[in-house]
Image 1 (tube, rainbow, N blue to C red):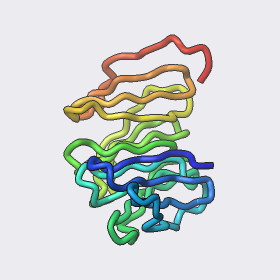
Image 2: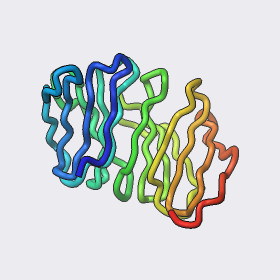
Image 3: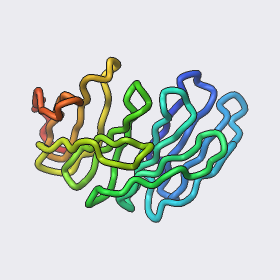
Image 4: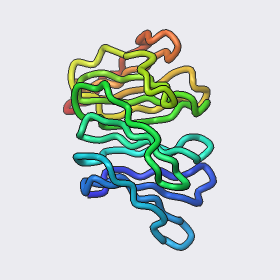
Length: 169
């Protein structure tokens, strides 16, 4: 299964995350695979390019986030800290921070260069499957198994709003 895809801003490269434990980077114009990134020990669930397209983050069932050089395919760093599978990742517009969503019921803000968790967002009562960053980079949304979406202030970590209405996760 291809679990997720991401495009660079210029639309020239595509990354795909797969249950085969790999990430592939593709040339969109020729549909040619350029890189195969291996290192996850379980299904890869999401991928995200940094805003400038030089780095790629991948999220896995192995509880890890891997940061890759998107040009060479070299692994830069592994981000450890989630207590269960990592389901989604998203870079902030500044490219200096990364959000992750996990089955451990948290969203985390990371400094991908240091590998440190800057902040945890706690409020979901169930696994968190998705995360998105608003264009201005001030707020983020997460969605999960508790059938809610939550709007967060990224700087303070404060929950701003809860959206309810879905009947199932």
